[in-house]
Image 1: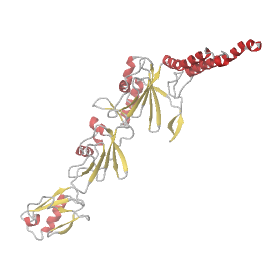
Image 2 (image 1 turned 90 degrees about the vertical axis):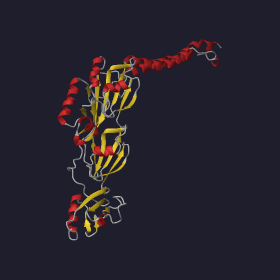
Image 3 (image 1 turned 90 degrees about the horizontal axis):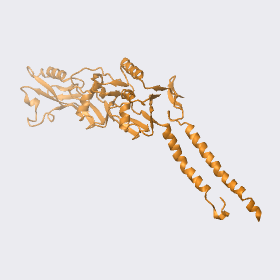
Image 4 (image 1 turned 120 degrees about the vertical axis):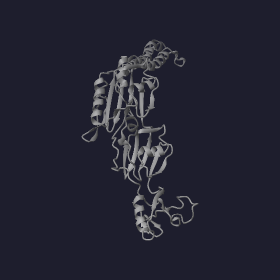
Length: 410
């Protein structure tokens, strides 16, 4: 009977041993968490790195391959280098506008060159013309003067011809009103002495362009004798809505799609973007839903924000997110992560000093950029401790509890 009592301390020690082991494991886990690393640049125990920790998709030799990307510090030299490169290429992503701010554009800005100058309107099937023969009202308005010009006009048939008294069937498709007038006058001269006539277009119906997307009144527009440029078409459709992407208007012509930058036209006077439209063109004014930047990490309001006319700087994005968290952030490690056209880039800004924010104001963001503000080491330590503390308290509590079912043994 004495044997169990003599072995009781040993049993208590054996029961307490797993608790001590668990406490040791918790401490080891805490040390591992503090010294470990994650896949986000800058969120690691070692900050001084010059390349990404994970492989990113990049273009090498004309194909996509995974590779680590170097981290470029945001300095005055970098901003000057980008500006000079944009001025030299004439097709920059960072373009400064006279309207203030900076415009960030992506991809090729090339608009199609129709090679057309202003020309007289050429008739086509469906158009209605009005032929007036002076001193011969019976030919001009055979049904009386109470019919409208469109009702009394002459319709161009599907085969491009019209019928006119004493002139017969006349092929007018592809001709201008002046050429139709000369042709009719030549034929009527056989039956009318000193013929005087005029040809007017009363309904333009053979040539159309189509506007869709973020315009006030999407639909089809008839091309008339006023040259139909892109700006003319947009204004006839009631203008662009507030949700439109001014720098990303798609023009589809003959099976090919081009991107037209209306923002460059409006703000910088780039008249090459005011394309002369052709019959059958489709103009699609895209919305700005994809023109977002993402601000993550230690900021007051992390999330995504829509760029205003594709124009946002790093300082503006941080300000819209409520700026960095003064308690948990480390402003020395602000990252901009960018993936565009098969290339990946990482930029780092040391904003520990306030004047470094001048660099942030001069650094334009592009759509889909990710801004990340790193956490301070002390904040990371506090978070690890706050996660371990409940487990530690639970282990301490269970180590002091006696279980009556086992004779009061722990």
